[in-house]
Image (tube, rainbow, N blue to C red; front, side, top):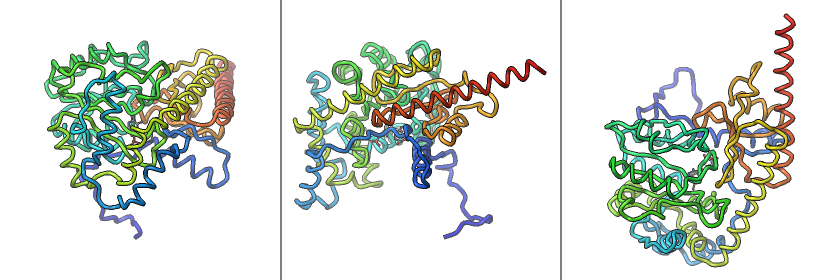
Length: 417
Ligand code: PMP
Ligand code: GLU
């Protein structure tokens, strides 16, 4: 099919505001350049570079051989929902977690979409602390609700406080998208911060969608604090998003989940029954192994240790070679979010241009902060090999020094005139 200038396609109202995912777009651009022979180091993708542990993959192979190739139960196989429930219970010190509250979906992305579409609609406002992951505002738009951006405090690792949220709220506020550990900043909310936010939300009858997909990738002992560490009475309007993609290196399997009050889970399942009929059947068996098999735990810890080593390399490199460059010290996830407006000048006046020039001239792919709501910042993913990270950092410093040199030259030129 060809498109022509007299195209008959008019976007429906549903997608009139829709923008494609900027994170995915940068990753595709890096792949395109590599395919034509360019030497590109891709630190754009929010995706572990490890392969799925083989004991997990074997779970899917066994399932295929056992004929688990028919439609799955729409809300997820019981093996997986039960494994996820006891896994989440262990992570939160043994609090009871019931499999009936869990719906399995096609990646945490679909879990988030399901939750947004089920809870919010026209005239509802949903608070989104920024910077935020690229898909939240789009999902809220798709639900025909209004995203309300709440700027995080640079003095507070770009996190938000109850006062920030209160100030941004009004009578239409129905929800809050929380992400901890955070994409793109790596900031982690403490248990007392989570308590204060959920107490406030519960008082105001606001739903909290707590995206905890990076919970296991935490650079302090144990998993990152979770809303599941809080008492039951604070969780009656909370939906937890979790999944297998990040800590288990299972991005391609597309398994995510919601943990929600039963009526919400039933509504999410009904929505999903018309959209996907449930997540990939063999992949669900693999994820059940991920959440329950003891042999997997050592592999997860090993991957997290490697992320931690890479984090140290990146942070030290910034301190040593880019002193004065502001960044959020990541306490979780695998991103470094740093500010680049100090080197704007000439034709580089926003982070989008900064990243375009960096990939073209420096051979490094990073994601401009515009994707996350602030175009003075850039996100670097350190889910890559140490060798790639070291080389990319060298190229980045060179690129920045060249930009600064050009800017200094410009200033000197102006002074001479
Ligand atoms: N939430 C956040 C914060 C993410 O970074 C991602 C990354 N993809 C997702 C949700 C979606 O995860 P999944 O790959 O399981 O769909
Ligand atoms: N979540 C990852 C990221 O932020 C993967 C890409 C995407 O789904 O947006 O890069």
